[in-house]
Image (cartoon, rainbow, N blue to C red; front, side, top):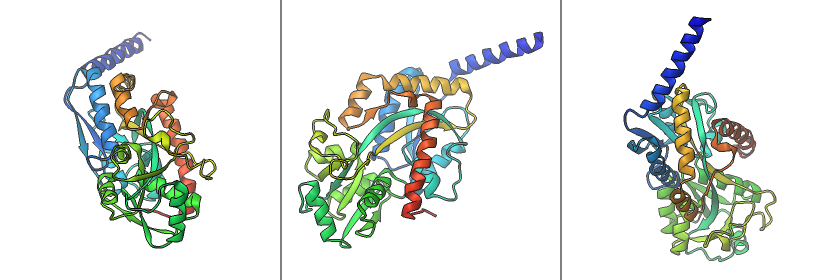
Length: 327
């Protein structure tokens, strides 16, 4: 018994020392999409807000785009489980479990869940030349031009892909538009602003500044209620208002570490993330983009994992009904 007690005390002391020594080198946050996109923006703002709570350690954001986010996520799943390689990913953590029938990782088994960062509403937007100014005119224009318009997204499994898929499914417009995939949200938005594509459904973190500058047209938001606190987005109706019952979609972002990362390290990372989520500057910057910083039980590892498990089950129904798979 005395030996067991000695061992337990030694293990506790070692865990405490590990947490104190962490980080021992720069931390890399992998974003599985191109630079300049909405997830990249969230990751860079989070890194800046977390840094003071990790001894002002260097935190580098690296973009590892491709295959709907699965390349970057797979890289983190295979990384050394020491807390120095992390992942910021959005709803793709849940959707790829159905979109890809053969994945190099298991979303629920190969990561340590560190907490949900935010919820980002989606906006239904179009090129500036589209001859519609209200959602109803927009919908009528699409139906009148079935087969002649296209819908851009940032790649299979991206937030814009999932949103477009759900909106088309709810509207019965699966065959009305040609889907055009891009290699990320930034190039898709560039094509929309330039008029090379017609329609897109994307995160407010990627659309607000373009809406405010008049570079694209906006028609609706995907939240259950209007975004009355946002100076720009409060002017747009929800899709529920426009007749799509129970349509409520936000794109959440979460923070992950490789499976096997020591509990002392994951606890310190979670504490730093939670401190960042309370930072007034971080909250203000997120709110300016239309994002809502998480405050509920999902900021805990347990709540985060339970939430993603539920999202995997919900999205599987939509994806299988659409019959769109990435492999």
